[in-house]
Length: 383
Image 1 (cartoon, one colour):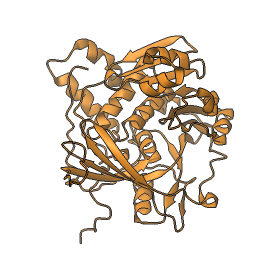
Image 2: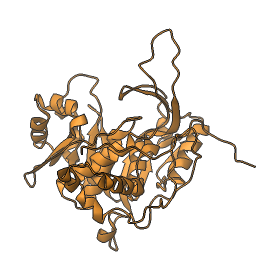
Image 3: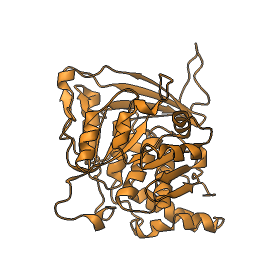
Image 4: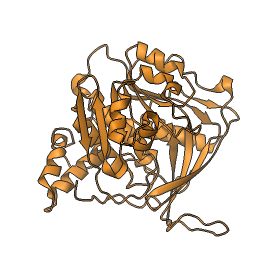
């Protein structure tokens, strides 16, 4: 897309914390597919919830021995909450199994996810005497640096995802050298598993160290991860190589967009990125995965899924915070109306997103106020 899109959101330091419903009644992407006897859950996730504190508006990286002032700050649930919120805001019935700290941060994250986003936290639990993990993220020059602190919840107190609920799909974050038995169990019951992966700190980059990949339908690494795992020097070649291990490979290319290969159909697709002015890239990868999962469950063509995933990620980086920067359908609709109204748009670029016309809400009004990241936790209720 040749045009940039400036978010109309307000500065989160000035925006009050609002509550929303987890789905707009007219924005259920699976409405035409739902039938009696369907799984009660669309997407299941498990992982660690962090309290994210994000500083933005830094002119450069912090310098040792000096004090840096940020022009913006936001706090929001982070970690696996990024993905869960992005899925829920796109209208999917989302269930999360996670441990929550027995502190104000944990209470805030639980309320933001359950009450604010409508995420099912039945499999989750608050762990007595355990404090919430915290990440401080500093965004500058289009990148971010993070510092985290936390302790693993006591083994006997963590949610046990050994018997995941019946779900259409699950999103799993694979860890080299670690097997998560719930992934195989979920796949055996018909759940479609989408996997991403983090940086391999061991430096081995061995696909054999990701045994759960065999139970996954799709794998969504970034270009560097894909090339290292496949010993290739081209992300597109890496995507094709990955289909020897998983049916569908999606490789994100950063500013160049994304490329995907479906082994089952022989189909390939490549979609360029949307140029936007990024405020905070935290959680953009999770939003991309959520958008791709949404399109896959809805049965869209591969190129449409890539385009939608890239669009949702582009919209997310224009807001503070990981989870609460995720767009809903009203934000997608606002973007689609905006780019069509500009005179200098490339007609071919507009055609790439024409599938949105039958998906987005028709009215311009926001159906509910989305929560956004806030500078501090626990504002007093006005008297």
